[in-house]
Image (cartoon, rainbow, N blue to C red; front, side, top):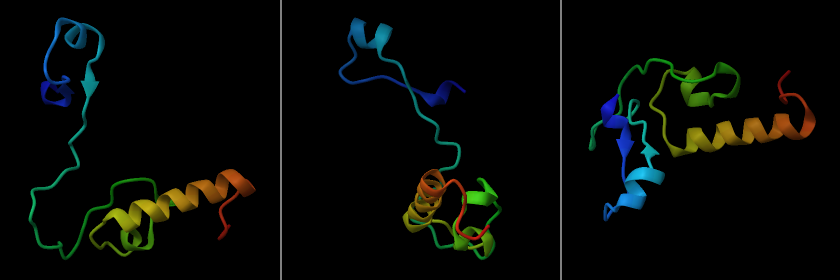
Amino acid sequence: SPHSFSYLTPPTSDSLINRLLITDLSLCMPWPRRPRAKVPFVGTMRYSGVKVHDGREQGPSTDIQSIIFIVAEMISGRLPWR
């Protein structure tokens, strides 16, 4: 969508031509917001954290868990629970 494009500030002809940034805010939520009781699943089940599987609100700790799962698979060639 057109809302996904950003430009560096201050805008110069060089930044408008050569430095287009794509910003995806499709999964953002308004802030402040109370945690939802049931959260729809978004992501890959294989690398998702425990909160995601329980249907709870996600946060930075969930992202860190996902990174740990991905790095563990890259190192050993498989996930620890397989």
